[in-house]
Length: 85
Image (cartoon, rainbow, N blue to C red; front, side):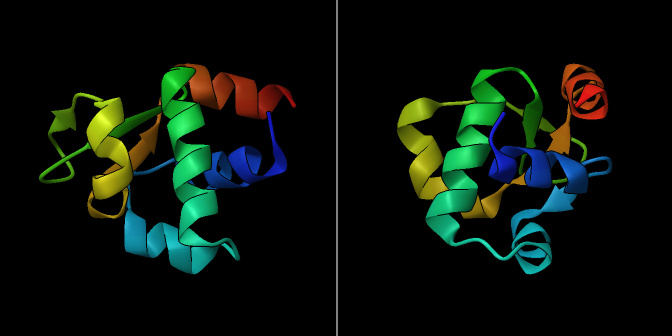
């Protein structure tokens, strides 16, 4: 797990909107979206959209365009890995 991925998981114990996530990290949009995409592919983070309570299916083709519109939450697997490092 990269340092960026670890830092992002650190912020996703509760549902977080992209703007809030960005404000907590000193990373660029492209760094955040790339790390989120990696975490989602590993099953460590899930997407919520259009609201905080609706899980949204990951679509690799659309993710880059919509990354900044979603809410994010660490999965149980993501939290286990995060806490074991």
